[in-house]
Each structure stands twice: as structure tokens, then as C-alpha cells.
Length: 251
Image 1: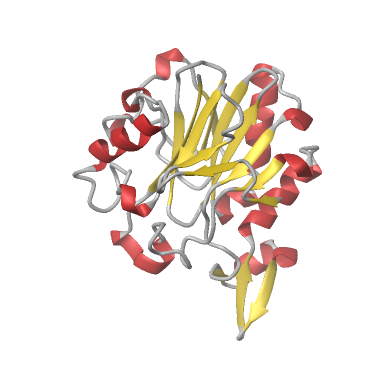
Image 2 (image 1 turned 180 degrees about the vertical axis):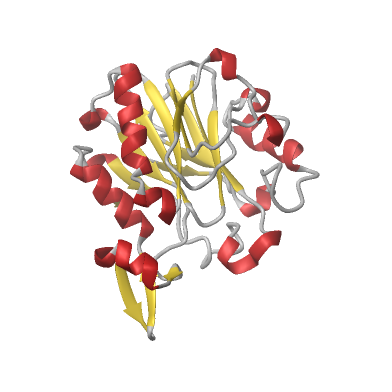
């Protein structure tokens, strides 16, 4: 993974894959507001979504998002799905943690506050994807299943895919219990009698193991708990925590 490559930051506006004019992608920050219609104080969420997505050249009313459940369902979205969850949480796609599409002007997004958002872009097809990867969905290899969905639906070759990781709870702060350590023994370390997980490394290795090129995997975010002024963190804040939006769209 390469730190900060593929990143352009302008006053809390982070553009992912900025060197590719065919795609608009980025993730929000805490100062831009809570982007969730389901978590914490959401009364200004639509206003804040519109402002954030307008900066990326994306129509917030066309956003497709999901009711995330920390599992491994990937949905291929089309024009019939436009706006699912954009204005009402109840209309979000059910039980889904990753979305793929090759439809232009159709934005797909996930919401995070410690979990890892993973952006996928195949410039050859072209096609895109976005995944919500916590430790549970990472055990189900949600990143690999998103790649498989891109391959199955659009003929994507894994070696062509560019992958970018948004902000996430880093190994400095991601304390886990013994049950999680047993699942990811090679990705946990001990400090002060506690176990800490490197979630990005888990997903990076899963991608590398199926043929994604190391030079095509980038980290574009930092630890959500350490950088509390920039990001929401469920571990730090609990149930009152808002959510960041990670969104990607083919132009």
C-alpha cells in the first residue's frame, strides 16, 4: 500500500483517483457534517450531502446507498436503482455492504465511522465499486467479493483495478478481543496486555493474494480515532457518532 498517492485534498475535500477525469470519488470529513440519515443527529444530513457531493460534481439525489450490515452482499446497481437511499434511509438497498456499477452519472456510496471504505476503479472497462469493510465483513472477504462482482458483471481484470482505502480505525487504536485475534492472528499485535488489529493490512493482503497489483493499492485516509477533529469515530464517541460518506461515480 502506498501512503497518500492518488490523493488531492482541498480544505477537507479529498478526491480519490484525481488523475483520472473519467471518475469522481472522495470521502467527507467531520467538519462537513454527519452524512447519515440513520445515525446520530441527521437533521442536516441532506443539506450536508448535497454540499459535499456538489464539490465532486455529483448530484446527491442520484446517490445509491445501502443498509449496511457488516456482511458480504455485493449488489450490481443500474438505472432502476438511481436514488435508492438518497433522500430516505428506508429506501436504501437492504442488507448490502458493497456496490458495483458501470453506469455513468450513477454514484454509489457507503457510510463509515471506523470501518474501512474501499474504492474500486477499473479504468479499462470502465467500472467502479465501493465497499464497507469492518472486521466482520473482512472475515467474509468483502473486498475480494467486490472484485469478483466487477469481473462477473463487467469483465474486469483484477490486475487493472485501482483500489483506494478511506479513513479507518488504525492499528494504533483498533483494540480487539481474543475472538478477533484468533481470526486474524497475523494482523494483530500486543501492546500493554491488549490486542490491536491492522484492518487495512487484512484487506490489502486479501487483494494482493488474488492478483491486484501492489502499486495499485493506496491509502488515502488516516486513523479515525487519532484524528478526531477530522473524522467521526464510533469507538471514541459511541451511539451519538455521525458518519462520513465515501462516494464514487463514473462521469
